[in-house]
Length: 248
Length: 248
Image (cartoon, rainbow over all chains, first blue to last red; front, side, top):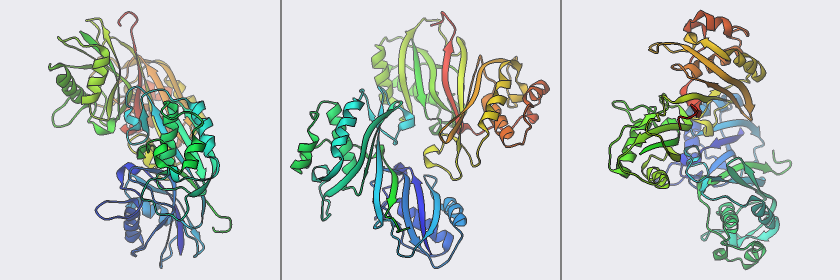
């Protein structure tokens, strides 16, 4: 039976999604919980990697087991065994061939800035703190420059090893929500650190460190050094994952 | 110089406001920070006690020092030395006679329920989790029964030793905010655990464990056992403190 889970996690408790040596990941915590519930050690397929400190409101992962169990039992059983900073929100059975990573059509991320003179303990590890007001209309106009199909090499951390750096961004906006400023972006795929470099570039534009109107030239240059700093992980949330028609 | 601070704190990191043996409090953390900044050990006067796990968006506290320092320096210096889960939002100098507790005219609290089938890691320690939908219009109507001047003995934890249990509630409402349900209440003073017992009673009414219309009878009875359970501390926020005219 192939189960597809929707997970929510506070990334500040983990060293990212992906299992690795000498650090506890969400994936390992989930595989441990599945082993306790099903009595089988299985490999879970996540929809993407996430860095240490990055959050998810709706992360998708699938796994196959020999034993069958009602989805309601999978939800309550896994939530019993999982770390408090992770929870299973939904569970459905999917076709055997379904793969949470390879059947993904697009993903939506949010990058959250907290704007306030002094730190806010309630946003500790949950947002990136900015002390001065941000120019939200400017950031929103500039974010629209990411729309469309581009080579995003300038917005990709060094050390990435994908075949193509071309991605298609279908939604990009910056909005104010009380004392938060949120950059929301949807694309068919994201390069390593892409959203955090986009967010850092929009911040630099608001702060006057990069002039408005530069994003097309930065994209064309494919030069990482022309974009802004990589914004810190605690502001990043994986918000939604969309799958190809017919895959589910 | 008598300084008045506005503090924000995530109560899940502390054993309440008040200094006590064998447990670290916000007050102790603040007095330690003041000692590091001013080189003097002083006693801080908080606007009220708070229980372990209870939060504050705007807690008021004052202290007097021999040394004078600009308020901007007090803010940045204390924020440097304080635990990350506390922050000073504002600092002003006040008349020598001002006392953050005794000059208080009224306070506003919020009690926050998170409504969701499964736990939400982002509300861990920040809201009280309720698995089933709440009847918000009913809870709001019932909350209005707290308005006015009443003896709140039925809404006071045992072991309290105040002279009078009469308090005046001036605002009380229950509203939905996305997946949160918030009970907001303002009064000239609160008895021990009063807001948490009020919140627990409104929850019981929504769940049908106490019939609607019972609050006046519970108030008249002065019998703690007739009210609902004390709701857990993680849902409670001290929101605002109001001072007597002319005291500041």
